[in-house]
Image 1: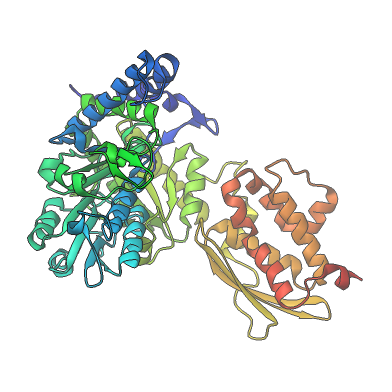
Image 2 (image 1 turned 180 degrees about the horizontal axis):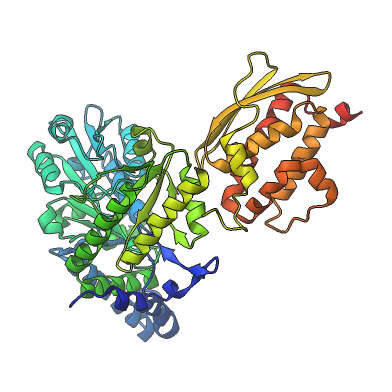
Length: 417
Length: 157
C-alpha cells in the first residue's frame, strides 16, 4: 500500500480543528499521538454494543468482550512477531510495564522458585544516561531495595551512547540491562542488538523500552533478541490507559507476580495462593478492556499503513526539519544533528529564549510542541540546558507543517531579538 | 513580525526580560530565599533589606522563561522603597489577578497600583504559566517573612 499523507490526515478528526483561529499543527506525537477515527470507533463500539467484564462472565456479552480482548492480544503478538500470544501482557502504560518488571525482580528475593531473578549487593543494574524517568526511577528503586549498584552507559556530545562504554559498564557483575530503543528527548536510535549481545555474553537480562520506537520502527522481538520489550498504546495512535509488556515465556512463567488480585491466581486459600500462568499471572483485576481492544485496532491501522512506509515518510520529514532548524541563527540541535540512526523527534534550544517561551509563541500560531525536560532530566543536565523545545512527527505530519515550524521559530527569534 | 496583539508577550514583558531591574544579589541583606518552579525549571534567588518596616533594597538572580524573569523584575520595581504592608498588598492584588483565569477586571486603582504588572493580565488565561508569573512575587513574600515582617497588621498598625 502506498503512503499518502493527505489520505492519512483524513483519518484523524482532530486535525481539522483550529487553535487560536488557525489550523492545528500537531508536532507533539512523541508525547502522545492523535487518534484515527477507527480507534475512536472501536472503543465506542465496545461500550455501545458489547460491554461486560472480560474472562469472568458466561453470558453472551461477557463472551463477546472476552473474544475481543483476546483478539487484541493476538494482534499485538503479531505486531511484535512474538513466538506466543501468551507472552503479551496488557498493562496500564509503559511505566507500569517497567515497574511490573522492577517489582517482580524485587519479589524474587523471597519468591519460591525465582532464584534466577534474584538481585542483591554486589550485583549491578545498568541503564543509559538517556533514559526517560519511567525507565530510570523504577531501577533506581530496585537497586535501593536490593542493595544492588545502579550504573549507566554515558552519552556523548552528539546524543549517542559512548560505544566503548557499553563493554565497560556491562560486566560480569551486571544482572540486568534496561535501555531505550529510541530516545524521547534526543531522537537517537540505539544499537539494540549490540547491547543485547554484550548483555547475553555476561548473562544479564535485557529489557528494551520501545515507547518511542513502536510507532516508528519495526518492532520484531525475535530480531531484537531481548528478554523483555515494553511499549505504550497512546503513542502508537491507540487510546491512553493501555500499554504492553512482552517477555520470553519461560521467563514470565517463573517471574514472581507484581499485583495480586482476581484472574492472576490459580487457587486461593486463606493459608496461601498459587498463581496462574502468563499472561493472566500479570493481569490482576479487571483490565482496561475497551482500551486494549482499541489498541488492537491501532495496531491494525499502523500495520496497514506499513511501518516501513511510515519510517520513510518520517525520515524525510526529519531530514527536512533538521536542515530548516539548523539554518536559524541561535538554534542548537540537542541530539544527533544528522539524519542517521535517529527518529522523528527533534529537540533544540534557541539562544536567549526559554523553551517555554518558544512553545507558547508557537502555540499562538497553532503549532503544538513540547517544552521542558521531557521526563528525562539527566539528559538536560548532560547538555547544560534547563529544558529544550521538542518537535516530533507522526504519520499525519506534512512538509508544510515543518515549514510552519521553521518559520515559527524564526519569528520567535525576531520577537526576542 | 512581532507577536500577535492578544499575545501574552506584551512589549513591556519583553523589555523587562531583556533589561531586568534590580538584577544582581545584594551584599547587605536581611533575608535570602530561593524559589523554583519545577514545571519550567525557573529559579530565582532573592535577597532583600528591610528597615523600619520599609523594603529599602532588593536584588535577585535567576534563570527561566521570560514570564518568570520579567515578572520578578516588575515586582522589584514596584516594592523597593515601599512599606512592607503596601508591598504585600500589591502582591495580594497581583496574586488575585493571576488566579482570575482571564476574568479579572482591572480598575483604575489597580492600574495605578500594579503599574507595569498589568501587562501580565494575559498570563492568567494560561494556567500552565501562572506559576511562572508568580515565582518572584512568592519569593518576595517569603523573604519578607524570613526578615521578620510577615505580620502585615502589625506593620500597618
